[in-house]
Length: 459
Image (cartoon, rainbow, N blue to C red; front, side, top):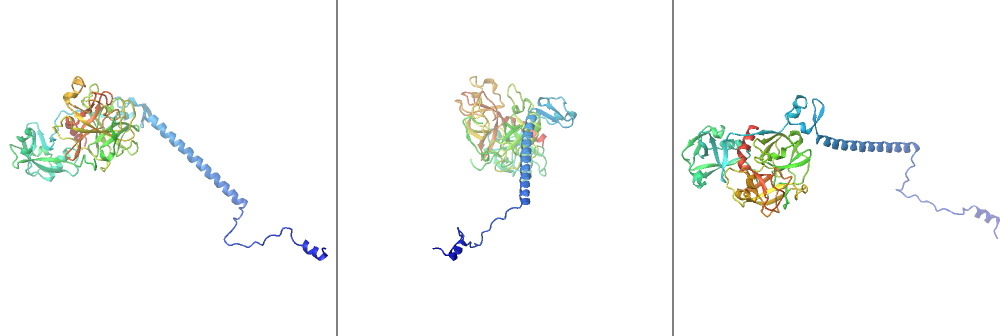
C-alpha cells in the first residue's frame, strides 16, 4: 500500500529518465547559418551560375565564328583595303578586283630557266664541277682548295650546314671524268663564287678532285597514302611535309633546306594560287593542322604542261626557316649523272589514299618499291609516249603497292652514302596500284638546274 510520502516521491520522478550526457571533446556542431549568411551564399551561387552560362555562350559563339570564318575563307578572299569579299576564283587571275590589286599581289609565280646553273655535283662520288660558256663543265682539282672554298661552293648549292670536302683520286672516277677537263681555284679567291674563282688545267697536279658533302641532309637515326604500305614515323622521314590549303591536306612535299620545299606543280592548279591560304605542316607523324609554317613564295616550273604532266615540279619558300631537328630535317638533292639502275630500291611516303577512291590516311605511310627501267615504263603496253625524259617510274608491274591521291608532290627517295636522296616527286599515274600502271614521278635529277636557279634567285 502506497503511503502519501511514497506517492509524492514517485510522482516527482520523470516517466522516461534521460541518461546524463557526458561531453566528448572534439565534436562540435556547425552553427546554424543566420538568414543574412544564407542570402549571401544564394547570391554567390547565382553569380557563379551566371558566369558559367556567359562562358558557355561565349564558347559557342567563338566556335561558331571559327567555323563560319573557315567556311568564308574556303570560298572568298577578303580585300582589307576596300573592305569587301570576292570569290576565290577571282584571285590571281590577272585582274585587280581589290583596291590596289591586293588580290594579285600574294600569288603563285612561274619561272623558266634558259641558262646553265654554274655549279653542280657529279656522279655518286659527288665530284664538284663548275661551268662556263666557253669551257663547259670542268671538275675542280683539289690543289689550293681551302675550307672557305667548301663553304662558298656549298652556299651556292643552296644548303650549307657543316659542309665538308674530301679529295677523290682522278683514277677512281668514272671513265668519262678521268680525262677531264679540269680546273682549279686561284689563290686568294676564297669568297669569290666558285665558278668565277677557277682557272683551267689540263690535269690536276694533286692527282685528285674535290668531292662535297654540304650538310647533314638525308640522315636519320634509324632505319607507305600509300596503297599497300605500312605505318611510318616522321623521325625516319623528317623531310616529309603536308601542304595544306584552308586547313585541308592537299599535297605532300619535301624539305630540301630549312626554308625550301620541293613539291609538284599540279598541286597549284585551279583556285590554289593565293599564297596566304597555304600552310606547310612539318614534324608530324599523324595528320594535323596546328603549327604550320606560312609561305611567301610558290614558284612553279615555267615549262609545266598540265596536259602532258611534264616538268611537274614547284618550289615553296617558307616565310621563316624551320628549326632543324630529329623530326624536321632536309633530304639531300641527288648528284647529276648518278646512274641509278633499274630495280634500285626506292621509298615513297605520304598521307594519301590507302586505296583507290578511298580516304586520306591519318598517319604517315611508307612503301619500298623498285625503280622501273625507263624503256619499260615508256613501252606501248604501259604508258607509251606519255612518259618523257623528265619522268621516272617506280613500283611493281603486278600492282598492289603505289602512291595515290594525296601523295602528290611527296618524296621518292633512295639511300646511298649513308644518306637519303630525293630522286622523284610524286606526279601521276592511272588509278592506284593497278597492274601495269606504276607510279610516275618527276625526275629531280633532270630538274636540278631549275631548282638551284630558283633558290639562288629567291635567296
